[in-house]
Image: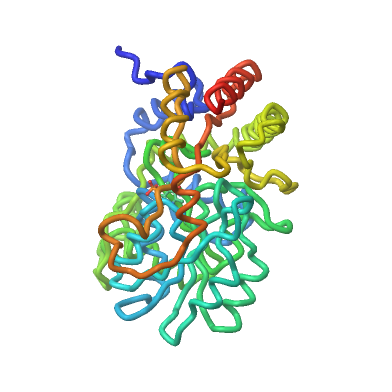
Length: 380
Ligand SMILES: *Cc1c(COP(=O)(O)O)cnc(C)c1O
């Protein structure tokens, strides 16, 4: 087998062991590999983990965001306030339901989450919802955002892809707004290859999501195979957004590792900060954040820089075998969104000057020292 990781230190590495392999083999041997008992168990355990009423497993988080907007009845003419500093899927989902994205800037170079004051300024009579994104797993200012939403009768969807288990004032991210959306793409804290989860405390949203997940059919093949139902009706225009039991079985094992993974990630973050605290050329966002967070990624921001310098630093690190990334190119600067007017100076600075350093639980202190030294050298 060829080595698919060309870097000595990749940006991310799976927290997988024989347990995931065994779970997959056991599922295959069970002869039920599509949506079934393992999806149900994964949903139950996920609800327990984040303390919410309902979880619906899905094919990915993009599907979760799409169904969240549909379940809330968002459609053409509606405006949805969302960050530009996010993965493009957050915004594409808004377009799927023919609504209009309205982009918010971030708070500061230290706090890369949405600026609540800016959100408030963007509200019009057409605004129906806010999609928040908890960057790197650090919570948005949910107290202010929920207050704004209540005052203006807006729904709140949390794109919590970066933050499984992250907390905001004792509540898990994804459970503060009306709907939370999670991803289990291979490089997320919880990895199943592809996968997603929609969570809510609202029974109506839950029922609607389950319906739309599987073609708008009133029963699923798993229920029919179990003899619980023999007929079905189609009562809504749904999709095939189901997860399968093979992925769910990996997810079940992954959940058991999350607490330890999170502790390890916060140690790694602390060690990075120690190593980099004397580097004046960079800002470490959220450096003073004290809460319990997922640390999905470790972002740094170059001071007084531009994208030429940033790309040069990234290339230097690459030459030293260190894989880096950028979170994110600003969505409003992509061609397909260029017709939307947006003044987002801080977001644009981050898009040009952020570098994401490796972050995963198996990263060692030696590796962090090496990365920090190479970064320091590259900055000279
Ligand atoms: C990964 C990610 C998504 C998309 O998730 P998929 O499961 O790949 O569809 C959406 N938003 C954010 C912030 C993400 O990190």
